[in-house]
Image (cartoon, rainbow, N blue to C red; front, side):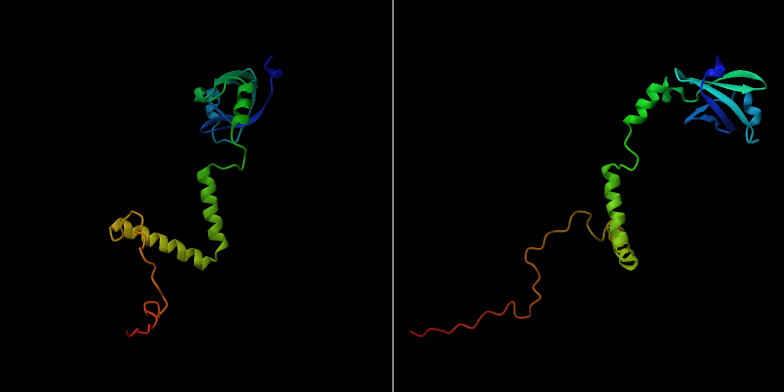
Length: 160
């Protein structure tokens, strides 16, 4: 019966026997750890918590480590995989970080480094208390750069 189940050959690793993304206990194959020896394994699609291991001509049953995280059947496992985010999709935090990285790449290396140094110095000044952490107060009147901005036009006095 066991020979009809799907399976393969895997190596026994220190963390356990890893087969198709699930880690199982060593069982009687503990002596094969780090010896680069492969063992034949079989797994029932109706019960992923058990793995059948062929060792010394006998089939042994080993249990899944952290069985609470392992789905019970292969259909449940496939449903869980389908419900995950697609490969390459990002969370909003990841999108924001990606935009920041792209912005740094677009600017030259010197400009990117200058920008990072400036941000780091502002953060350090805020930590030291030299700059308040709150947003800067808006300037009431913009600074005028024209040298004649404050000169009033000439007015002729009227005589009565």
